[in-house]
Image (cartoon, rainbow over all chains, first blue to last red; front, side, top):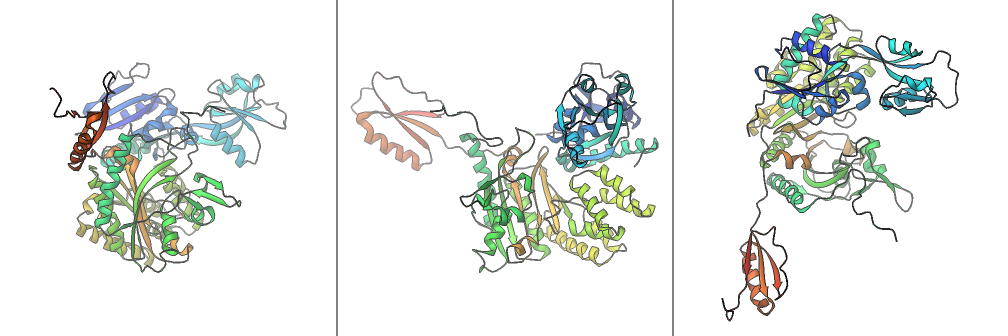
Length: 217
Length: 389
């Protein structure tokens, strides 16, 4: 079998992070197709001249693709990594798509005996409230989390907040910050060893751009 | 009576159909042959152990153990690895066998998986333990044997990454006074979270150039020259001792002719509570993580027979995918005979079997549809001398 050892497959998250991540990869000097945009329905994009291949996947699935080795590298939000807890290398803070993982609720909320927390991130929520010594019931939702306190499904929510506009529009306020979130470059454990040279080059070029932008090393 | 649930099994356990078993066996036989050639002898230990002995002493975190109670209410565990049970045997049953001891095993081990239904909770390992020898050569020996075992299974592109927890510890201690901060940094490395490692370094109250030195630990990967650099640097005794041990180990690896497969990585750590010296992981073929092992000098003492030790465990389930090897399959013959020629059929089957064929007999009866002969390479019929042809 001859699989060129130098070729890298990168799992890219569709949605919020995609444009910024693509921009960063371009700034790092990789010539990716100009017409490549998120709304194209392509699920894979080959860039043979850079020895790169991209997979377009749902953000929460990025760590899965990388852990199982179908992608060597991935770009994914720290929120997903905190929730998923996968066996991967977290290589670089890309400092893009900054936001916060926060607890939010209605401003006039009363203390209830057995509070319910609605969230897309049940593990993060559970861990956080345990650490705070609070006993809550976590309700797992897949979207429209802001609706939950308004209709009485939950007393509070745990979700990512960037500008706070969505919260405001729904009459919610940010109550506590759980973690600061940015996007990360992650690597498969075996690829980190077996393709260490190209992965290191990819890392170095991205790290250089991140540093130039005043991000951390 | 309730109908048995035919297809349901507890989460994470599997059935192995014949094709899979023959692949697993093939791998086990290949590595077994190498282990034996290097003087390792196989031991078996029970599937069940006391939590208080083996469960607590091992490298596997408690929440991954399958626990149950025996008739007297004592907590038992399904063995989560083979190293702690072997340490128990070395310190009890084999107490009078002089060090060094070279032992090997093939075993199924059990680890509870929290998250995914698809992950295995029972898997198979083959491995060795080399107990009671403090030399760098003994460390090199198990690495060389690991490479040879992978080669025997046809694994391509073998890469062994070697770290040393003692060296990492000593280096960190030279930069950081607070032992808590040191263990937090090691934790980050243990989780392979290099971003968190850098964040924690940035939060430390140390001079900028020292910070750069700490960052550079993450890229301290290479071969012998890495050790030469550490040797000439301005370092204390603990670093010096670890470096000279690794250097001698490296020279032995060169003599074994496997050094080209090995990369040193100062940031590589295994289970932090458990490993005491060098630690290694093996990778190969198209992205397979195939083995891990290392030095564990504190384990045997917990069973009352202190001694230095190291070993490794191969992940058999992954080796069957990483190696192209197929077990050699003897020719399978279906031998059909009319009842009255049974004796001839038995004799003929015996002759063929002695030649290494797999022979299955079928009595043919007039008026019966013959069974399906799929899966056989050849069909033979016994025809008596008096039969019209």
